[in-house]
Structure formats: C-alpha cells, structure tokens
Image (cartoon, rainbow over all chains, first blue to last red; front, side, top):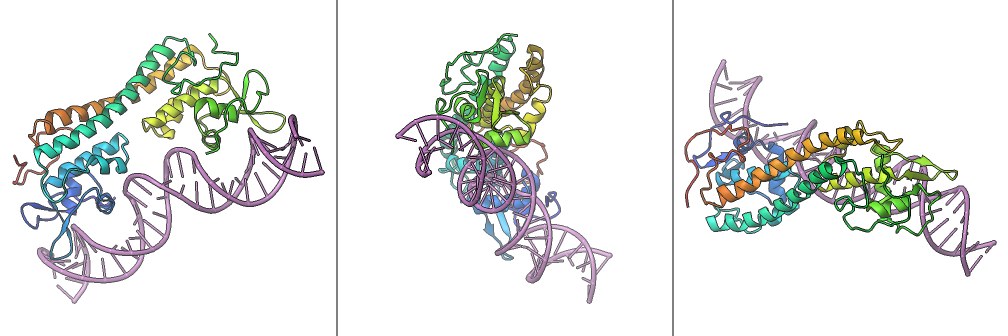
Length: 154
Length: 154
DNA sequence: TCTTGTGCTCAACCTTACTTGAGGTCCTAC
DNA sequence: GTAGGACCTCAAGTAAGGTTGAGCACAAGA
C-alpha cells in the first residue's frame, strides 16, 4: 500500500492538498483515491505538473466514504447518497442536510437488521427454544413449509 | 438463479432435506449452498444417488449465514463464529450459547459504528458546524495535521 | 550528475462470494 | 423410449473494490 505521511510533501497552495496528503489525512490509500475519482465519488483539479489537487472540503467526503466502507455500504449507494452534494465547491449547510437525511435512512435500516439479529440471539437461541418456526428474523419471508418433524427440544 | 420451490421434490426421508428443499426454505441459491459446503460453513451427507441430504438443524445455520451476509459479515468470520458449533449433529443449548456470545460481540461492534455515524450525521452535519477537526468519527486516528485553513463556516 | 521522493497512466492482477455452462446420471411420467 | 426434472462435477466467468507493476516525468538535495 502506497500511503504517504503528511509532511512529506509541501502543499502546492494553502487550500489544495496533494493526493499523498489526502491519503495521510483520511487513511485512504492513494490507489483507492484514484479509484474513487474514476468511479465519480470524488473529484480533483490538476496543477501545472498534471498532479491531482484536492480542495479541503473533499476530506469530509472521503472520510464519509471510508466510514461507509467500514459498515459495508456499496460505492454505488454512496453515489446516490451524494447525488445532490456538489463536487466542485464546499457544499452548503442545506445540501449536507439533504444528503444526510438519505444517509440516515440507510444507516437506520442497517442498524435495525443488526438489532433484530442481536435480540434473536439473546431471546431465541439464548433462551434455548431453538425454534425455527417462531423466529421471524430467520424466516424473513415467513414461508416455511410445515411438513412435520418440527423444531426439537434438547 | 436456480432456486427450486419446495414440493417439487419429495423428501428422501422425513428428517433429511434435498438441496432444492433447503434452497427453497432458506432462500439461499442451490449454487450458494454448494459453495458454503466447499467453504466448510455447512455440511451434508450423500444418499444412494450421491445427492446431498441435509439434516434439519442445518437450516438454522444457513439462515444465520444469510442474515450475516445481509449485514456484510465475511464468510471467513462466520467460520470462526461457528467454530464450536458441530456440523454433524444438532448443536446443544450450550454450544449455541457459546457461539452466540461471539456473534453478539461482532454485531455490537457493527451496531456501535453505525450508531456513531448516525449521531454524527445528526449532531455534526445536521447542526451545520461542518467541523472536520472536532469530529471524532470522521477522524478515527485523530491524526489531522493542523496547518492552517481550518474548517469553514458557511 | 545521480538518487530519492512524489506523482502520472495503463494494464494486469487479486480477493470475495458466488453464478453459469458443459456434460453427465437417475428417476418418473407420458 | 424419450422427455423432463432434480441432481452431480469441474472449469470458467462475473462484479465489486481495489492493489500492483511497468515505465515515465519532474523537482530537490548530496
């Protein structure tokens, strides 16, 4: 992984960061940043030497991408989540708010799935009933056949 | 996707299910079940015609795998999570409990990450401060350089 | 002048988690 | 007796999310 520490390179201008600096400050690999750019999730401008320069507001965007990655949200979804957040200038308060509402919806869904599974593990397996039929989470479509030989008690 | 409806085939014996039946009852594709078996996550016996037969307790295991998949837990992790749950017989109450404790730890970690991100979106972006420096979640390593041109207010 | 550091492009490769396809076996029904 | 359905194996393909490597450019320092 080619990740460079910030300080190895001087900023070209005060408000623009090199790819190495962005990598050091966000924890995203240089190659990942180029990949995100190609994917359309982030954007950069080029300096006189054809090197990428990132405005500071891109750091927040990249940080959000990294967090989303940690919890397994696909990049395609991020593209939609960021749809109304501009790439070419610092987003306004309203723009972030609009985007964050979409984010929250996605996060909430994910959290609820996990919470259901957690309570299943406590309330169903934990209690020892081991019932497949009674378990709404493990039978999402509720479409079990009921042909005999049901759940067994130990 | 080759998923068969239960009822298309008759069970060979009351307590053993064919791969098609298991697929219909768990929602997992037939090809996925074969893959899980090769991976070591599930197991089957063969009947006289070399066809897979699954004991009923395997349904629960597969259901848990499907749920874990929905929340993005890698199969490798499941292998560890299931390490002490036997494949060859219905797991005992204690065995499920031991395994479920490991599960709960993993789930809790994931849920906490999501909760932190949710509260960030409300408390930080939502409030409009847009502060990169003050945001613990977006700066996990807390390793930001502090070279001027800080977060901007709108 | 030569090396080192940072950056560039493009193509190939990698891992995870499966799916698809080719070619074959049984069994049942028409 | 042949068609169809469910199953088998093994090999190859796919999509996501990158990483790695080759080959090159430019700038600064020893």
